[in-house]
Image: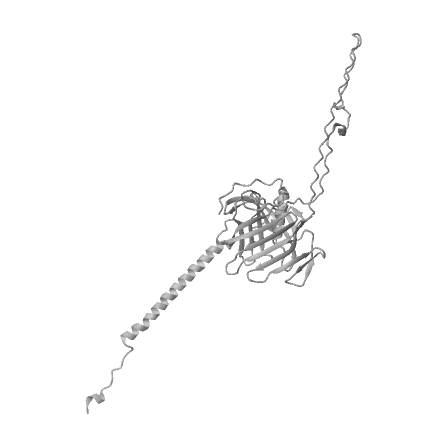
Amino acid sequence: MPSFLFHRPRPTSGEPPDAASDSTAPRRWWRWLLAALLVAGLHFGAMKWIDRNRPPANPSPETPPVQIELLTPKLVAPTPPAPAPAPAPKPAAPAPRPAPAPAATPAAAPVLSAATPQPDAPAAALGAAAPAPAAASGDRISVPPSGELRYDTLVNGMMNQTGTIHWSNDGQHYQMVVSIPLPFVGPYVYSSKGHIDGFGIAPEQYSEQRGRRAADIAIFNRETKQIVYTKTPQSQPLADGAQDRISVVMQLSSLVRGAPDKYKPGVTRRFSVADNDSNEIWSIETVGDENVQARGGFATARHFTRLPRKEGDRRKLDIWLAPSIGWLPVRILQTEPNGMQIELLWAGTLAPPGVPGQGTAAGTSNAPEDAAPAAPQADKP
């Protein structure tokens, strides 16, 4: 028989060399890809940790000082009227010339003129003004003039777009709009409008819109003394001097402008503040004077912090008012319960609104008597 009939094919131990090399190549690429992704993930995590634990440029004290005085809303103290000018004393008539007396007769005593005060004469007879009556007790307040305020906005220390506070005050009515741009979410817009009464700023409507959601509104009904909300059917009593979440900042500024020496470290001011669905008491305490770093440089500012509203309250609010800009907020910092921080830092020149050459409208004329002079202006950004 032919030998090829009994020939068996030689068994192979595996695939050809070319096939083996082709199968190992994709495995090497997957290993390099996984290693690159792992390294990138580690770098990203390290950057997030560094950013989260990076100390802020304007650190805040951990614990506020001990409270030494509690202030509650009071009617604005009326300004005492200026005393009337004292009438000028009438010129005295010339005394008649005495007739010549004989040499032996002693000289007559000199005649006192009407303008010469007598030892026992009352003060009114001398034309002295009576002391002015003391002013009634109450809050001294000076509502800030109108202005467009610009702020750098930061989220967890990372710079975002510029935010604005539009403030309008004609002496009888006011309007305030705060716009904070946030990436991926959209702007947060808070607005408040109303009038100015015996307690200062008196909101009539507060609106809050976060991103693309519909706005929630709180209405201050002065006739029924109630606050009603569009977000909830409940209503709450309207207290004297009640504020909303953003008007309370300007009300605090107005009070400090009126009597800056009154707000010493430890002094606590109590406000009734309405949100978009509830009303609560805010106790804002004076921490003290600190240096704040803003875009235009450093500014001395008075630090105020909101005390916990209830046990376990982790949401914080800190406000810094600077005398160099008319006791307006130079820094506002809100800390959320999850640790996220939203910050506004003054981005304008260190001069108050209404100063000639700043491009802002003039407001009320009740400027604080003892406000500090404006600091030297920095270059406009």
